[in-house]
Image (tube, rainbow, N blue to C red; front, side, top):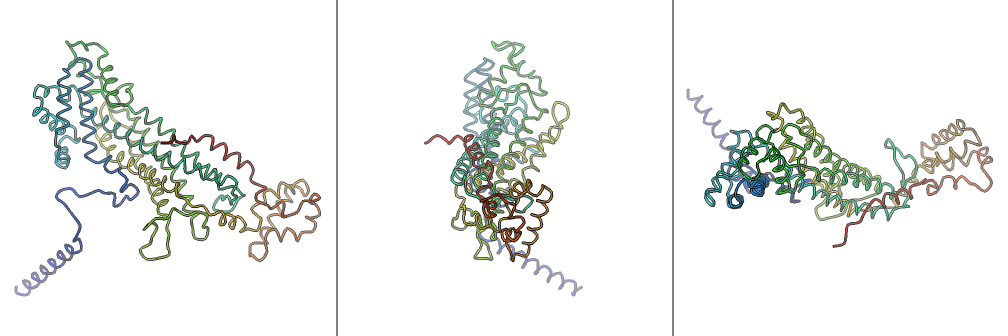
Length: 498
């Protein structure tokens, strides 16, 4: 028994030491009470850029209150409730002090936050405008409020994303213009292909960003308010209008239009409680935006490799550093953008899957959308801001572009030689000869040009005055690169000054 007691005491002392060590290791960290902090620690692409506040729990509560006020004002404008009630509800929303953490915990009872929020709003209205209490949330349902709030926040975030896309496009247009004729090696399947220009590469990035921006604006302009009542018939809204000047068979439709206008959202064609195309549209366009930006960032990663060195990210204190290797200048902006682009499709897949919604109100599909929507918006906003910073400060190294272009000693222009020699040797024979010459350069002892010059029979067939060096000049085999850059630049409208 004594042995067992001593063993237990020893184990207890060991547990105490371990707990003390854990407390010591976390000194200086503010744990707070209740919920912890989500500051973007594991998602640095959107940390410290304002998007956390724009989509915080507090922002969602504010947007839902905004929807409640918009509904009251729309009903007042149509004569369903007194104007004083609408202003009383607005005052109650302004004066309400919502404990978001408590609201979240209590919302488990209804599986959505609107039910408890309406209780809080009603109490706040009772304190400032008791006569308006009966007009809070009049005829509405939770999904009307939460969906409308989601669209409201989404439109605002999309507007911010588009501003950053505009910054990115302007910076890429400047790069395309400056390097319109700067030759470099195009790469296909990770190998040198034919010459291109850095300007054309930047013009390609620009075109994708402009495409994404156009689609984003169209999506934002079409995002609708939600108003349907319990099962999408607008019945309660119309019943509350009975006996007023607003009474009529289309009152619910008129109310939805007025409600949307109050919120600055598109008028819904009809209630879309279980018809989730708006969420699908949002998911698709966010994937398109991060895909376009991710392509740009991925190319920057490859071109900034030590052995490539064609571009470098903008330098800044502490950026790109390694915890172990002092010489490193990692392409961290590109890393952040690519990380967002790789995550987005998984979140938007949930939004798409939620289109499979049962009946007139879905048990679970609707609820599954909220957090993926928020995360997708956060990631896209972070990627857009980061990509703008990357594009605006990207350093291009023409000397490295030229060095890499010359690495193969001219074989990068062998396609041009094939075209030139085909009439002289036949297409099949010309290709065979050039492939053989390329193989002879594999060891690096001789250049492609040297090997070609050793074929006296080939040189004899060249037109008078044409040399191998002439045929291998990369600048003479850029095709329509310059014209394509010009075409892309014509699509870009620089932002207005000021």
